[in-house]
Length: 298
Ligand SMILES: O=C(O)CCC(=O)C(=O)O
Image 1 (cartoon, rainbow, N blue to C red):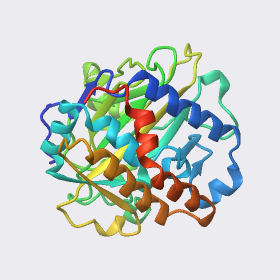
Image 2: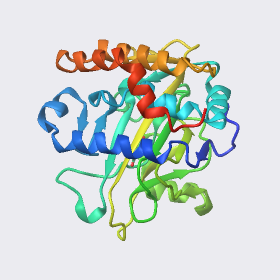
Image 3: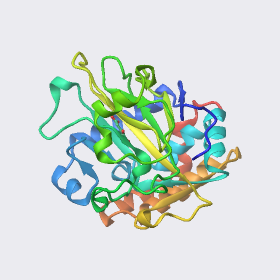
């Protein structure tokens, strides 16, 4: 099981991303959603009409390295990530998402909340299982960092987690709410109320879903990154995924260089139409880093 300093397998970090950064990202996201070519992005897998989610790679103005740079400034975040994954971390860039969850009365056609699942199931072929239980080693050792860009969990959809470590992947039939409610005590179901920029860092074995309630009347947008230990070989089932490597350290120039490297790595993986924008961003990284990060404490 992935080592994690908190027995629940989750850590809530209030105020991890500064409000002005959240507002900046939210503006970029709103602009992107306003002009989405839903059919084309759905065809490439970059948009999911079922969860109204957009892969972060489809918004090059928010490079994954920039999100990482915002997170890693917090010593508790960084220490916890390194405790769990070791000194070198890989970010599964294809599995970093922007999520938009609507107030229940405003669901667009096809939209649904995320039902119970474990992120450690990433890439797992449940269909191939038939009636067999998932293999003992099917659960990936990984972390998710989930950051709402607006308040959530009260009048806007948040996350609900079972705050108890799981040793294995649950089969789809075990993931109904009725099954989980019978299996876990009421106090183990956790629905954190979060502010913009709070972060929830949690292990890939944790059961979670979108928390919605009929009384909610606001939508929520969030960003999430997924991390794996770089020291381990990429599991076979993730061979087609792309990873960007991060490591610790607090050298002042490090974030800028990492951001630039990450931008270039992301650019290499993008369709031609987006590549030049991202390469251009990498070239101007010093200016944009200064603009975005100057209010943040080191
Ligand atoms: O953002 C949400 O509502 C749920 C996201 C989630 O569960 C996930 O990405 O694994």
